[in-house]
Image 1: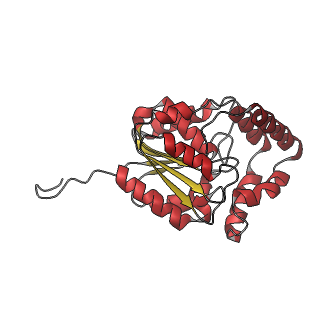
Image 2 (image 1 turned 45 degrees about the vertical axis):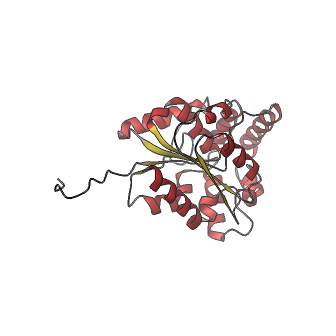
Image 3 (image 1 turned 90 degrees about the vertical axis):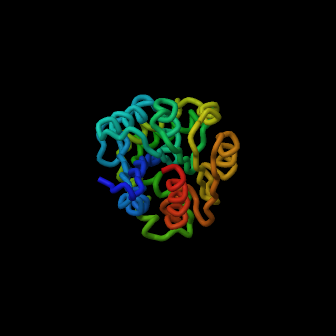
Length: 252
């Protein structure tokens, strides 16, 4: 118990990290290492990825799984962060249980629903992965996921996550993601501080997407990380962690 002269220092808020597609929780290794000494970090494998069995049938399955895990861990309130598909899952989580989220981090993601062309593209890719497996896809997109100049160990990690993902799980997620809702109106109603981060060279979710989210979020900060593509948390971990750390200090 504190003495009367000792200021009360509340425990820092837990940090919940949601990985993207087709990766697993080790995507967040630099952040887990940086922040777990000072706060609880929850970084699960999404359903169908990493060590998590089964596959999704609806995009909302991901948010329901996150909610159930946090209930099981008795994590009531937290800062929620997601990258790419993980950012869209974070938005879905905010729509589902906003009262538990104290800060929202959206990295290299976008809120709009899929276009008809996008639906066709995702379903065609799902068919391809089931037919061919993950390696050809991983080879093709590696230098869009991370910049060509990325550290070779980072490239190997990203490629390894992609090729380790079961094609059935990746295909199921693509089909579910193609049917996700539009989160643009939801972002205008976010009542907690938000952090928007994007790699300057991201072609999947370009800087313009991040700027659009920043513009509609009521209380947000935007950071563009130079020398990074779609995964700045791995490509430029020092810069990403500094930005995230400042945000965490602000929200608790």
